[in-house]
Length: 540
Image (tube, rainbow, N blue to C red; front, side, top):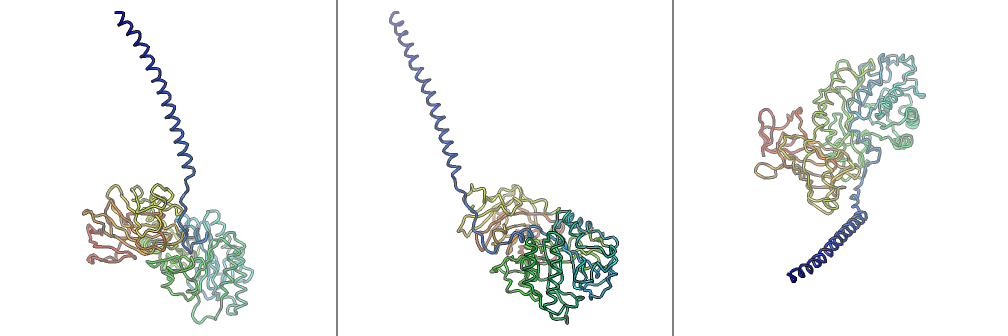
């Protein structure tokens, strides 16, 4: 018993001795672990703060100026042809119409601007002087102006009222000043008329606040007096007086004519251009429509078209339908251009109700189609990403952000450029939208879209050449969950700022054959289409 007690008494202390160090060790271990974690976190934080960011890829020249970029982001502008022609039922006035004919009794510039803004137009451009020479402002260089008309008792100024209305509404204001002047007696005398024209241009650019665009052309009737225009002097003056304005003409310098008055651009359309290859009043329409892949200047195209058959209002004419305007939209804005739609005010001084109705329907069509990007919730990946997959700055997810300053960029020195999309469900669509961050230069030469069919095979749906600020491609309705967007050729590493797919229930693809196994529509390629239940489906 004594031995058991002894053993017991000697065992208890041992137990206590072994427990204390264990407790002490666990505390030390915990402290060490916390210290290590703190150190690791600190090192990681330090390492993270010292991580270098991958810079953007090199710009590829030419690139747009700030004013050109702002112009392109505007999408659409409203042209306003207004003057004596409105009252004489003519298009090209003779320059001899009595100024007393000009008397728009219900003139309301705020209505013009309200219609423009509510219809989605970013600026208005007024024919301050058309070919007849009549001035819609009280010019000090001629009596052939609103000053000689009964409107506002001779004290009216259309330019001033429209400039103020545009400014109050927060939209841009531009002016057209026709070089051809059928009224001015100095026309045909080179030096004298150029001085006259510069005088009038100076009035317009110094009296009415910010001017966003100055529009002029080389239009002149056959048999008219020979006249040399000092375009370079005019352009220099405009940029001096209104440095934020872009200048439109057949050949730039800031924006160019598309080469037709139908509002249709080429299926290939570069903003790159060589102004030396173009002449105002005598430019090759094909060159204007397509631009120049090897061009050294940035001169994007503007597509002008009238909502009515004529440019001025005529009581006997009716406006185009909203669907026709939608088709023009695809072939202008959808081909890297700005759409300049002419909506002429009537003789009362208002935009006609039937024109407003069409514009409202046109706006609703665009909203119905383009307000819902069916790819917005897609899982997206890429063949490569600049700076690695973890680099959010160039991540492929950027293609769903509506901003040209965020974009997907592939790893440099690649020749395989692909975006993969999983829509997460089978969806129907018939419109593709692609945009490039044009402030980095226009890059893409060729591309195509593929879908994964039921057999697990990739099949091409549509293809195109050039993207630029925006490309819209239509094709017969297809269904798929998996897409692949492939850039075939590019001037430099291709960059994608936006990708979208949409369902257009309104357009009629009338020029697609039901029997041909291969055809082209709107500059795109469509494969093996069949008609099913009155809609066109691609069979793949």
